[in-house]
Length: 112
Image (cartoon, rainbow, N blue to C red):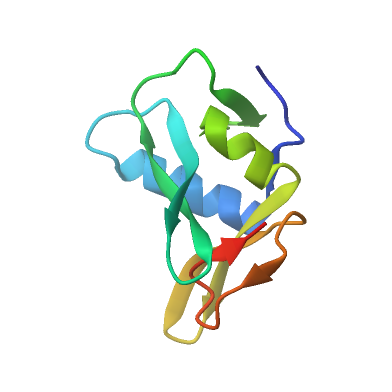
């Protein structure tokens, strides 16, 4: 399944993802995005190099970057915008997710 509307990347996030993919020890297919149960609010995002494509992955083709979204995560991330934020000494990916109903105080987990 290919759907560019499941998740979008800002220019800053796309540039950072492209840089990370270029530094991988083996050339990955793209970046795998998932969700796991953890944190004080229930869910958190996971990211890893995608070395294989699962039959039920949702594929987001963003120019020269491919995101592979785990099937079980699609319902939680649909419509999400991924950004790369640099503030002072901190830098991190952020997710603007319209499905979120709340976040924990530290911002590391959310619930829908």
